Image 1 (cartoon, rainbow, N blue to C red):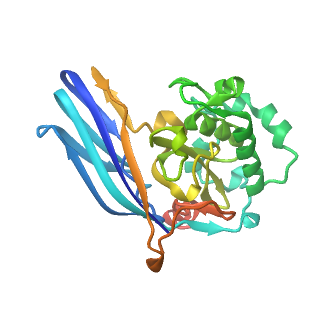
Image 2 (cartoon, rainbow, N blue to C red; image 1 turned 45 degrees about the vertical axis):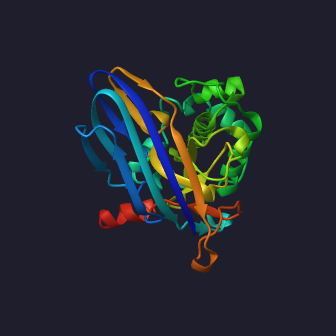
Length: 299
């Protein structure tokens, strides 16, 4: 098990009478990721704040702020008890096996044009045995062909753009891997989070993007940018692609500063908390989706 403590500071300047924010930076609630403690501070006393939680544990804050500086500080501690599985036991699921709620993660989306990459995906991976190791092959293929380069992409960069440009940041790696998986009819989704264990040479700690692929009824973790161990990934949001999981969506005339993020691992081996490390087992920090879905519908 890993225990991670982190804090996030967001600073804005609201230029009009008011502005609205939809925020998604709190850790999600899942059966494998538990929030031990947390604190939220907002400097504007009169700000209107509403907190919402989706059925899958993803959390949002709706905030209306007034003119002037807006500072948002969040700190929390999470315990992540990863579900671990032998990779050889995991299989790709037939479309007929998938709950209807999973189907959006098979279709093309704004940043993941899987329909345009079908020929490429079949050429590179179509002859491989389906299963976990084929997903790993896609992850490694993306990692080898795309250079991690800050500033090489923007908010409109798609998986196809990344493939042609051969450079990107974590969200671009994620979009390309997702598109290739979906091109082979594998459900794949975009996860926003925070990572522990990245090389300091990559720059200050920032929000991170990675991938989940559904195998044998559960979402398993993959990080095609490979900047940190998957054990060190804190889940914030999930969606079809980056358009669904922005840590802050702003409606209004607002100046934005870069987020300030700090994260540390709590090592307490006597109580079962270890430093996040790379390992061979397949890891999941989500709920067992298919079992949950079937139980809710009485199957």
